[in-house]
Figure 1 (cartoon, rainbow, N blue to C red):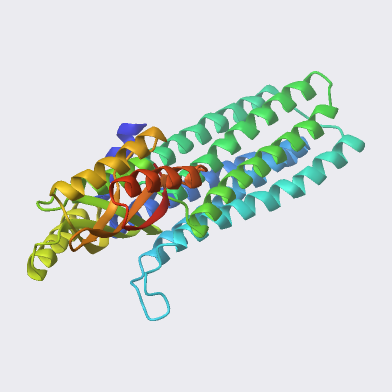
Figure 2: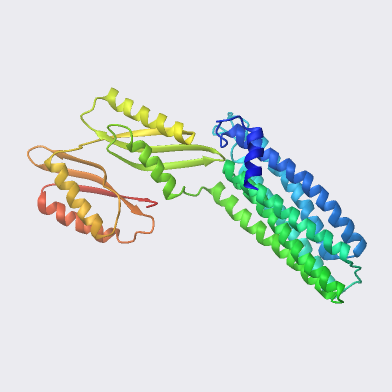
Length: 389
């Protein structure tokens, strides 16, 4: 299936082009959407006709679950088309989050259909009806299970190619449909042997799959809309790209905003304070270009001039690092600066700590004690910067 996904992607994307670019993501997203629409429309017709003539409420519920896939695939296509729109006055960061809104719409549709069949299945348990089942009907349901799993795997692989949560959500929808069809299969076999009550129970099971899938998809979409942090691996990649630029001493305060596939990155880089303004600007420009080229993002770099070497700064840095290590804090001190005339008059710095770090008061006390012992006349100003570590 992965080979098929790569083949289909290759048919839509010119060789050597980035599949995760906005235009190419839309091409793959809409391709998968149309495949889902045609496949689900056919499966809906098969399931509904068989369910209607057999009288199985579980199979009819499963048919409408498949029909909801047709609707959500239409939402997928709309989301990818709309996300291609360029930035405008009302939406200066583009329309990339239309893809996330499409994902949330899928979840809401799933939840609505699931709730309706929860009620219908309960009614069928209270009032069982006669159902006509034969082995041809059972065989047809088996075929639809394999067809839906095929569609799910294809959507997952295409979603991985373009890194799309929307396609992964659609894949989960396909898989939940396949699993709900398994429940229908159990229902039909049970009815075949005289257990009519099972039809209503399995209809409730199908509804449960819809509600669970809807909740999972909605939670991920809402997290994206509210803004979730990028992974530590992604932050480290940005950090290493910036550090690979000559004259960058340290990198911190990395912030990533995501608008669909479009990323906006801001970061601080520390450079030697002895560089002139033109050289500092050149460093920032090279950092921005390197990260933008590698990650296909818009990048803004803030330059922090710091004292890079010298006996005093090395002594201060060593004291702070020793205390950081004693509190199991990785990383390096940030924005370390000091003012010195005949003696050190003030020391300013930032310490990166995990968002879960709770021992700031003790760490600050320990650092102040050690620095004051060496520089008794100095004013010490430290800030703790919460981040993913």
